[in-house]
Structures are given as C-alpha cells and as structure tokens.
Length: 267
Length: 268
Image (cartoon, rainbow over all chains, first blue to last red; front, side, top):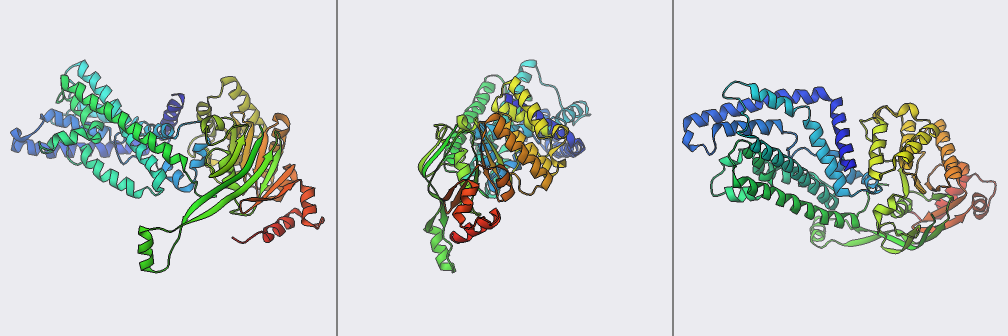
C-alpha cells in the first residue's frame, strides 16, 4: 500500500514537471466535448423520441468522457513496462521483493492519476458553469453522487487491471504492438468512445453491458445522470466487482506462468 | 551468506531458421527446436565476505549465472543455494537479502530526482525508518552523491548515475551484492571512486561481492579470487597470482592472460 501511494505521488510529481503539456490538453478536450454535444443536439432535435437517454444524461456522458480521457483511456499505456520486457530491464523489477502484477498495476494507475489530476477538475468545473446546452448538471442527490464516486473508482481500478493484463501477456509475446492494437480497437468500441453505449441497438445491450469494457466508463457515467438508478445501481456495481476479481485472478495466473519461465533479453 | 552452486545447467530454446520459402512455411507449423546451453554443469562455492571476480568472454554465461543467483531466472538442472535458499523458489524473501547492479540497465526514474527513486525503494523493501536514514546518509557520504540527490536522473553524468545506482542497490543493507559490469563506460576518476567504495563496503560490512567485469584494473584493485567461466563451465578458480601461474607466463599482464584464455576457449 505504501508502495502504491509512493508511486502515485511520484507520478503526480512527474506530470507536474510537464504541466504546460498537460494543461494544453484541457483546451482540446473542452472543444471536442462541445463539438460532440452540438452533434448530438442536432440528432436530438430531429427526433427526441429516438434518443435512448435524456439529453442531460448525454451531456454528462460526453463531459466525463473528456474529463477522464486520460484516466480511463485504453490507449494510456505505461510504455516503460513494454520496453522493460523487450530490452530486459525487467530484470530490475524481478530483483525487488514485490509482486510484478501489483507493481505494474501501481505504475499504470499512478500514470492515470498523475496525468488526470491537473486536467479533470478544470474540465469539470468549466463544464458546470458553461451555458446551455453544454452545461453539466449536478446529480439529483448525494446518494447518487456517492454511488458515482464508488463506481468511477472501481472503473479506474478495472481499467488499470486490464492494462496490467496486457503487460503480463506481453511476458509471453515480448512484442506488444499486436496485443495493443487488438485491445485498443476492440476496447475503444466497447467502452463507448466511438458512440456512447446507450446508442447501441437494444439486442446488443445485454452483451455489451456484460463485457468488462462497459464497466470502466459507461456504468459510472450513467449512474451520475440517474439513467442507472435504484436497485440497478447495485447490479451494475456488482458487475464491476465481478470483472475486477476475474481479471485480477486471470492475470495473477498468467504472471505466475510468465515469470516462471522468463528469459531475460540482452546481456 | 555463502553461495553454493552444484551442477547447474540452463538452456535456452532456439528455433532454427531455414533457408528457402517452403522450408520456412514448414517450420512455421512444426518449428525445429534447438537448445543452446548457457550453463552446463557449473559448480562453485563462494564464502561469506569474499569478493569474487566472475569472468568470461561475452556470451560465456556470466549474466545468466547472476540472473539465476538473484532469483530472476530458474535453472533447468542442478542445485543452487544462496544462504541455504534456492533463489527462484522464494524469490521475494531471497531478493530482500541481495543487491544487484546491472551496469547496462537502470534502476532509477529518469525524470525524477534521485531521492525519489530511493524513497520508492524504501517503500518496496519495507526498510525500517531508522536503518533507511542511516544507510542513506552513509551511502550518500561514501559515494559522494549528497549533492546529486535532488537532481533529476536525466541530468546526471554516467559516472554520477552509476554511483547512485550502487547506492540504490544497497539501501536495504543486502548481505550479497551482485555487480554486473559496474564500471562500464566510466571515466578513470569515477572508476576509482566506485572501486574504493566497493573495497570499503566489503571490509566494513563484510558484504559478499560478486563482480563481473571486463576491466582488469577492477580485478587487480578489488578481487581476492577469480572464477573464469567458459561455455557454461568453470575453467579456472583461484587467486590472481594463481591465474598467472595457470597461464604459464608470470610476466604477462592480466589483460594478456585473459586474452590467452579467451583464445584458448571455443569460438562462439
């Protein structure tokens, strides 16, 4: 635990050195969010009945996507880990009395928090004070907000666990490009980055919701806007917990196998 | 903390490359495996508090041995006991008692001040607060890195960085230190500092040190005993004067003796 906190602190410190780069991302994210809202507004005005969720819920969805772009982004890799596996620097990780999976998970989540911590609050505050139709509304009550906080925390943990799963898989393949490409192209679609998940056809909904990617971002975002409410919240958070445990166990097994027969590259 | 290795073997799988398209397609479906032995029947014993120079030409199996002794890799055959423990079985417990420096790799965070990497190691090794502070001030003084602690690693010269790497490997007061080419690429002054420190560490803390290097001055300055390995086997085990006797011509420089040994051993 101390290690995890130490890594997160260092990652934040690291980002802080490059704060200009980090802040410039805010502007991109704000403009992109507004563009998306304008686009969906046009759809909404054409036929409000065909809209699967309320318009405010969609606005919240878009803003959270932008605010947590780095935190929940499947593209957000710790490239150092891939390099380590390839060039043999992983040797140093293995000479430490630390579990590899946990260490890489800490690195990954540290990266996410580090890259997000400067940007997210700014984007959310600006979204809260923007005029209609861009305004982000506060949730209905504090219970909803609490559920949202729990859900987004679980979502972040799941997201990092999935990345860790790919890092661990790389122990077997050494080359990570194929895995990354496959994971990102399927994942981006299923996480709701291409089109928000509620816009998928009704037949596909149960399948998509059951897959781990929906639990990363879709669940917390819809809890915030009240689209998922009441008893459904418990079910959705249950799915998140299920995937966290499942992915954890799978990568644990892979890690054990992978480190057992590891061969270190380079002299 | 003694080290004992008996009949240790490690092989790597190599897939054969064929010439010609058809053969390649064929070998895609049924690859032909070949084994390359990095170590075969390696045996030696190192006592507590020794400084041992572990030599051999490139590809002789030096790094493989270090990786096995430090618990990173599993041997295929044979017995390897470090302080009566097999390194790769209880990796986490084992690595708590050893320090490793790979001269060609880095253990520090490139963009952050050195002290931050140290603090992270402190958390990972769960070093008690008092001994961490004691070790840090001791190492900082001895390795002359007090002024470097607050500088980002990327701004350090190689010699400065290597001293920091060595300090990083010793924060948890290991009983055994593996140094894999610690002086590679360093200037004469940095080398001198590193050597003086290693010597002192061994004297004052009785740390067992295993040093691989291609620098004969390192050996002359530091090492009590030389283990010369070739094709995964021990070719020579003894002191430097004994090595000179072994080579036949006592007036030769250590460099020439080693060249002789390299030429004697098989091609690779």
